[in-house]
Length: 188
Image (tube, rainbow, N blue to C red):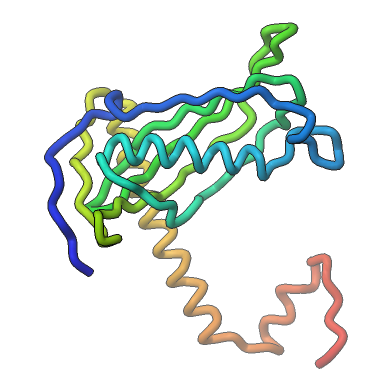
């Protein structure tokens, strides 16, 4: 992979992005709430805008981590998505997103979703390009950056642990793990 050096440093506040959209009837799911896919699409848009603003170039989504649906967004709500760069590596950025739904009649706001999108910066020839370093200006900035480092380490350790489990799978020994689960084994 070729990495092209692009820029130096940018602050989190420089690339912070918020977008708002009214939740209309065409966004409804079968339960009459806003479809989760609509929220995910909006999250992808705000992640792209935030990452591209920081990187100064086109960015693509490479993973979405921990999309948490706390409460449903309702039809008629004004949904605002707040995105900021939480972490950068050489060519990638982790964008933290918080989604707030406001009932325009009552003014009541609720935190509906949170997520983390990992984006990669791309150059003119679709090559990965270096992103500017992240300037951490507050204790919260440092906390978020460190949090991503810790999550990445845990995720890496978990993947390694799961792989070891697959390599060492012992069917009859591991059947005991299923006794209190919601499943039924029909072969032996």
